[in-house]
Length: 428
Image 1: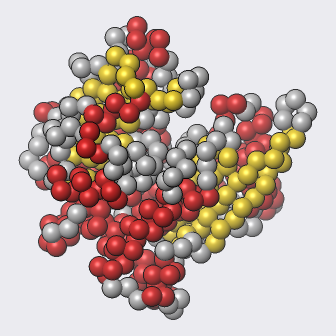
Image 2: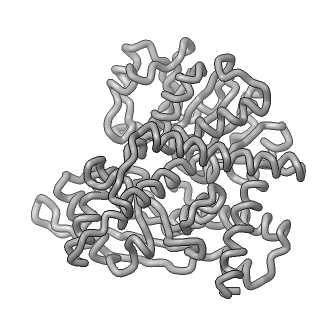
Image 3: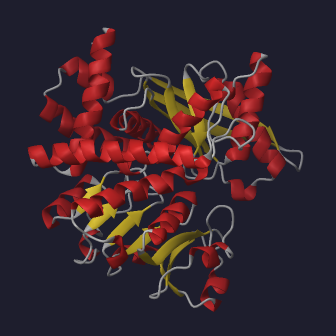
């Protein structure tokens, strides 16, 4: 998000245009799907702890809701931009469609750094965001969820404000809530586990035993943490992770050739996924520049941080040993880098397939809220595994049949489903 030269929405449109040509979509359908249906810009005044009032800028973008209510997270990030939110909402549309759940795509963001806000200030920001958008979101219109630097507590504050305004209980208005307050068991693990469910199937398709593989992971938030945990349970070994250092305002990579001990590293990690550098060094981790996660001599790369991380400028530095990339983040690979990876024969599990576990479990949360009956964790994760595995094989089978790159195959399935819904509704 900090790279001013990079426009994620233009990248999202470029990806769409490529597949629209393959599908031979008519001009009206192209114009409808390459742009959001609705876009909201809001100003949120917050009375700070020191008595001053600060005005925060926020966004909510609803890309497409032809297949059901829009669905997408809310980010808190100091470098948030409207173009990032537009891109993420677009990718959410394709994400919901590729795993075939009856939801559309949306996204939200507020320009702020929660590291520098007290709990009370964060609560006021959450409530203020909902006050601005209460009549434009909701269980039948647009359902938010946690994203970068937001969590279950933020969602509960937003839900409480929404219910106060509406004068009734709407537990399905938002997902990612605390368990016991309408949240689903398994939601915290869902995105990271989903990445590994698809990776497991990719390895199986290529006759590779996870026990014989190594990986390097970018990021150490919830997605990365649970992906590492499940990958370790399968017998794989992560030798490097990267993490944002709030004090230094840059990222560092942490390497241990014998393998990252997830519980050990978590013991020196803050709630935002920031690793304590001095303590990690005491534990025997080698501290490297932040981008060095990408150049490790491993079989698998898992970008699980932000967009625009594998680019035309650095893709050549990826080890020739790398055979698989599972995109835990949204939009981590640019089209220029994609071209190189395809030519090298790297098997890429595209973002909106690999990381769809989160929104799939959010859908499960909505279903449970609507029924007022909640499943046990094993049942949630079993349903998630089934959904992710089924979606992976649908994409993989099409890719094999038509000799397509996995990203193109996933886009063809997703865009075709959304375009058909728009046609069936008579929109185009």
